[in-house]
Image 1 (cartoon, rainbow, N blue to C red):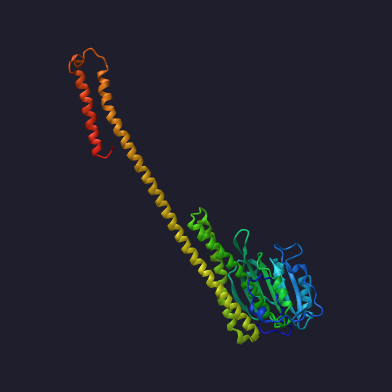
Image 2: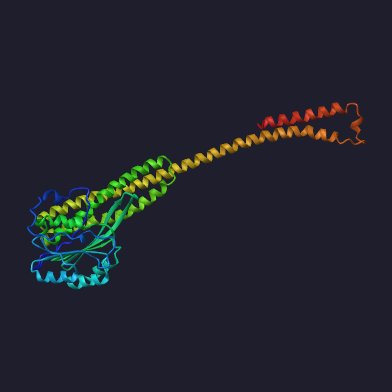
Length: 392
């Protein structure tokens, strides 16, 4: 991490709802509350959309791990930070305007490429170092129980010698809880911007836990629906697979990012306790990434099984249709055969029933027996022929 200047580093707060207890929350005993600490304003809860007053969610200055002021505007924050020889600014923004980001870039000497990324969002998780400033892009996730979907949000973090700036795009993550926890642990907060960055990373990674649990439940339900031949299960598999692709994009780069931070422990003199916290976060990221990889493979297998079951069902339906068609053909054969047999005497009877005077058979003594015999011979012959062909 960058070396701090005369002024202490600032931290950007966060709000993570965590399914597990992070390393620093497990080991750090709660310190006594400072004698005078300004209350956290309602702005700490980030709105879903920036208000007309601006996109500053929370701006606060800290000295020795204790909040000393909470300026209302960025200009006041810049002024008070200059007046504090050992202060640290922690600024949280939600969907900031271009002018706000440009003012931050001018005040803290942020790199134009990093500022451009923060403006446009839609970035892959990454870690870049620009001089003394560290730029981190994180992809947070939350599970929506009502719609059974995974909602992703983007978070950009600028970490400098005496400041931390967070730029949030989307509803997730909620960083107010991170700020509150850090303010309740001044011994950790006074370690500088590195501590804030690790707390934000921890909150983002902790936010993956309920997502993993929700996705696991969805996969279990999908497996049941597959074997029940639910009609909409294929679509649900496809939609969840797409979410897992995005989840992979959020978690996989984090593994490399955390290892890069750990590789710089000695170079940047990272506090030993913070090293432990970061390793704990890295372990959980690795575990989450492996779970997500497993989910993708499981969904692929389920989709294959579902396709096989659908094919088998279609084959069974085709077989049933073929059998029904065969039975219909057999019935048609029988009907046609009996119709032909009955048609023969009808034909003979029709000829002899025309009542023409000049028909030799009309005055023939054996005419009637001959007609009856002819009908019997024709019918018997047709019956024998149809029987040999299994039509009857």
